[in-house]
Length: 277
Ligand code: SAM
Image (cartoon, rainbow, N blue to C red; front, side, top):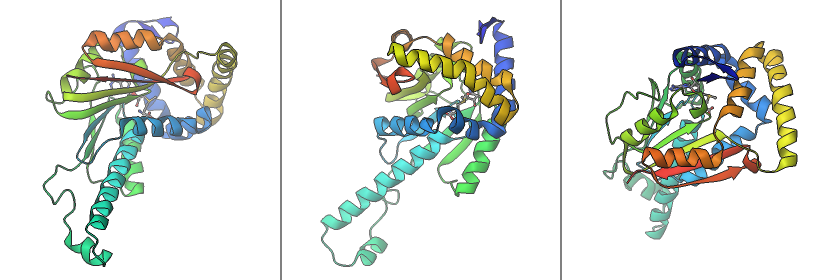
């Protein structure tokens, strides 16, 4: 298999990927903003809009790192829940919001399952930074952090409504195995969603992007995180990852249905989605 452009054994790749994220964990969020000029936030927001999760949904975010997708998910379902509650209250046409608010059961009190997000990542350091971030934001309800390998998930079958993996799948050694695991842990009807760097479709944008990523990202890595090599790996791993169509076939091969993808920012990133039937 490959580590960047080097050919290495599967075991070696896993170890080196671990080391990369162990090294970058503390600076991961700052570097994400610096390297993508903040655009990774928009890509992650778009994932949530495409997902449109409903209150009660159970999310597994694999390679979840410092928790960005899980935080957005919990925020989104809670906003949905509050909006639903307000709509229902308004439709009752009662006068005192306070009176209703106090007497009307919340969705959870009404017997629905509470939404939950599980962040699963192979790297303890990334999860540690994520947990600290969650504490800083005062988020703890409905959120858990689990050390685990995408290729061998520590969960029972048919547990989750949504499986996400954002900028994680290209780091996994055996992608087909990770896709099988995604299928296994999803409930029937559950959705697989993947955000990953992909192939830029516009040739002019492709040249600018190539020059930017090959030359500037390792420099930013050195200046901000003091780590040229890790960031060089990240850039090279993007080049090695299958393009949009090829990855779509891999997802179909794993047994997902209705597989489709959307290009974001001209194909810099692709959002793939498929369902377990
Ligand atoms: N999803 C987060 C985000 O979008 O900000 C983090 C993405 S980060 C680029 C990639 C993550 O994949 C790292 O946290 C790394 O530890 C994790 N990872 C790499 N190989 C993995 C594996 N086999 N199983 C689970 N996580 C893995």
